[in-house]
Every structure is written in C-alpha cells, then in structure tokens.
Amino acid sequence: LMRRDFDPHVPNVARMYNWLLGGKDNFAADRRAAATLLDAVPHAAVAARENRVFLHRAVRFLADEAGIRQFLDIGAGLPTASAVHEIIHGAVPLPVVVYADNDPVVIRHAEALTDGAPGVAAIQADLRQPRELLDLAANLNQIDLARPVAILLIAVLHFVEDSDDPFAIVNRYKDHMAPGSFLVISRSEEHTS
Image 1: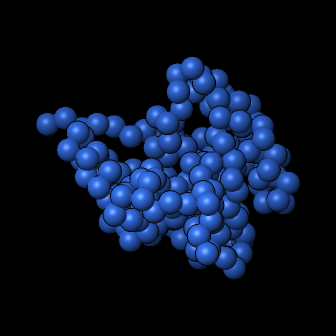
Image 2: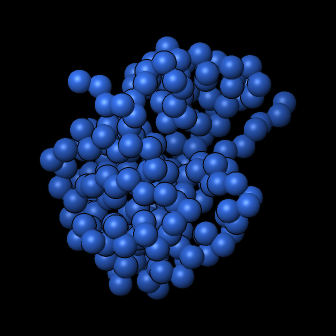
C-alpha cells in the first residue's frame, strides 16, 4: 500500500542525492531530475561524494578523538552506505544516533533501514525549528542535551531560505549545546573548472 504523500513520479531531493551517491533507493523521476541537475552543475555528484567523505572523517574524529557518544544528523536524507550509525559501529560503546529530516518518506525509509539498531532513531522535524527538533530528540530519551553532542548539518543549510535567517537558526542550535559539543557544518558547493 502506498501512502498518499509518496509519489514515485515526483522527484525527491533525498532520492536524487541518493542517486548522485550511486545508491539504489531512487526512481526514474529522481534520476531524470538529477541528470538535469548534472547538466546545470556538472560536478554535483563529485560534491555529493566529497560531502560523504567529509561526513565520514568528521564522525570518526568526533567518536575516536573527541569522545562524542551522541550524534544528531539534521537533514540526514536517505541513509546510505556509511550512514552515521554505521561509521561508528563497533568503535563507540553505546552510541546514540538520531536522524532528523522534514521529509516523511525519508523518515519511513530511515526507520526501516535502522530498525532494531540499538541507540538509533529517526524523527520527522524541521531544521528551521531548533527548539522543537531538539525537544523531540530529547523526549525520545535519545539525545541528552546536558551532555556533549555532535550536531551534523551536512549539505543541508543551502535549503534554508535567506528570509528564514540560517545564521540565527544555527546560533539557536549552538545555544542549546552542552560544553564539549561539536557543530559540524558543510555546504554543497558548485565546483568550477
């Protein structure tokens, strides 16, 4: 049974990104839209892969060197190979990973892929509403904001309109982070040759 908010004929940013990364969780409409994106921004797939490499390096550093045990991946998109909980699997005792996204399709997919993984949850929330998102993550008894946490904003802030004041949004996240926490931000860049 298909849900009403899911239409495989309408491109979805998360599934397009999945295709750019070489994933299989996408449909023809997503592939066509991603191909159009590549026509306009030829290095978009390279930028997507570079963002994943950066995510992997950052998460390993945070887990191995900084001792972070809680990760909040905001705007996570579809979990792909090397999702945060997979990067730290076995390296961190009892880690907590919460994936947050505003796309209900992404959340259902994340729940299916991470079902049964201890300490892993997915929540539907809007990054533009920091207090609500953080409250939801905390109310699930997942993220303890009194302890250090890594908040990951990887290739997502460019989706926030200037009128929504992305700088103020990021500052609101910072205001709720315990000492010893990390805020990791990367942006999607158009590469020029």
